[in-house]
Length: 114
Image 1 (spheres, rainbow, N blue to C red):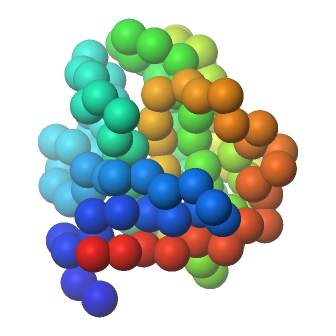
Image 2: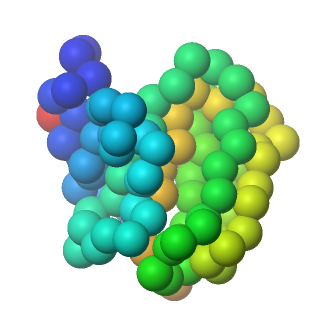
Image 3: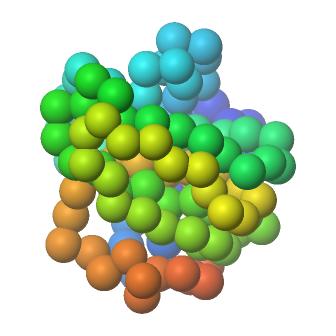
């Protein structure tokens, strides 16, 4: 599947419409200083321990780290925080803070859909 065609991500029984961070600007800024509504932003990487920050964020966000089509880690961050994933990941999904119990989705299967 070509990455640019990913439109949705399914995590267990949750489904997210996504905006793909497919260029330098989108990857550098992510959700910083912007609101993409109910959508999530999907970042794809070579396998590594992903580090990120919430500087200049307008609201708290939830972040799901994905490797081998499984959720390996999930965290909720307030603005002006930094975080480094403890596990290797190939993708990161970030979205507005929600009422999802992030501990319950660890290990859930992830599907990338067109």
